[in-house]
Image 1 (spheres, rainbow, N blue to C red):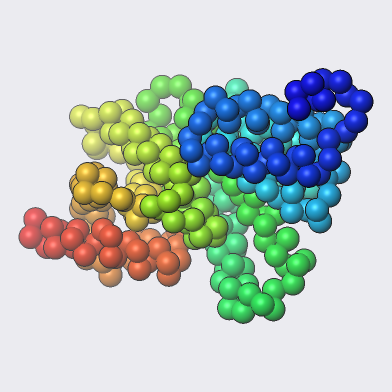
Image 2: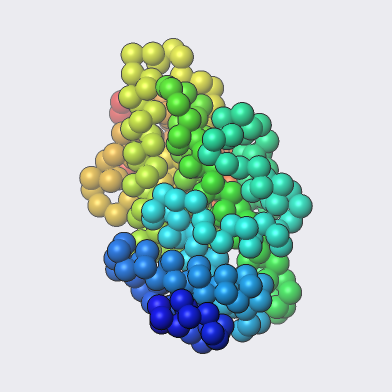
Length: 308
């Protein structure tokens, strides 16, 4: 395959690109980073030879599959997406503008509040759209499905780029840490609610959860001894911890999230699940998360808040 690509005599066929895409998907599942990088490089070159993602066949299915893998590999490697240019050319005007502006060097000078406002609004809109489509999937048209997939991909790219931008902001910037946590939790939300991935089997959810935990611990280190300076946007942290907590797979992870949820709950005077739900309703939320959060975290957490 490498010899064929280097020769440049014949453009790779859709079937060959699909085969590499399938191999890459399997390597993501097996967490084989070396082989993953080799096949990712090959896939990028194959798509370039064909003239870009939009030149591929299979009625757009191959393009959508590659975009999903692009987002997942970028998250695993904490790197910039490889097919971002192909994505922005066909995105909505708002998404195109945001993705075009986001670069790591200039990110601290952006109006990040506008980016987060757009994300929050768009994720809420996508959740409603997804609910409508799931009422009767058999009646969902191809046009409706493709529109949903495109908007979801746009959001995933922006969440990824924004999280990376906040992560590299220099100095003990508390808002940067909380906003990074917000973006990571947003990615968890999209994969869990809007993609239907399962916490026990989806490696991407496990990766995002670990990254969220690291981000929160970094926030704690930067604010240690200065609790009075903790920004009011800590409400974002409460939401992010609830989203991440639903992904807990063992007692250690559950205890980690419960400890921090207990602290933030006390900050807001939250003593039970009912008042917590009211606070979470101001952020992207869904019935699926509501049920999971109660069963996996709040049954035990509510008792500890009562007896504390």
